[in-house]
Length: 163
Image (cartoon, rainbow, N blue to C red; front, side):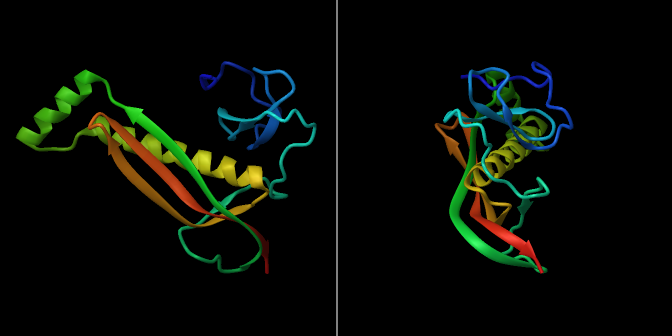
């Protein structure tokens, strides 16, 4: 299934990040990240979306705790993963950078965009479990067959309460 393109379906009223009836499927929910529909769907067809923070905001932290908050429930490890490839012309252009030096801007944008998407997928995964925060978030990046870049954002999904 391809990811719906931004603007290909009207965003939900209010546009807040949350689960909404999928405009592309029958009887399922799709996650709207606040700016666009994502590829995350809930296929169980239930009427109630997965639990989320009352505010609809997912806190993401690289720290192991959140000052001013108490962890009240731990849901376990969650991750967001994306694998992307540049086109052949970009690869040729980047190879010239290794000879002449300088920033490979196409690759910088690729990794930047990949990290943003990996974090959005991480948020959706945590929300599916009922979490309102992810602690100890980290990135892991790898190359696959020297032609693709894999980016994973991972951490521990938790429910926190403000002290």
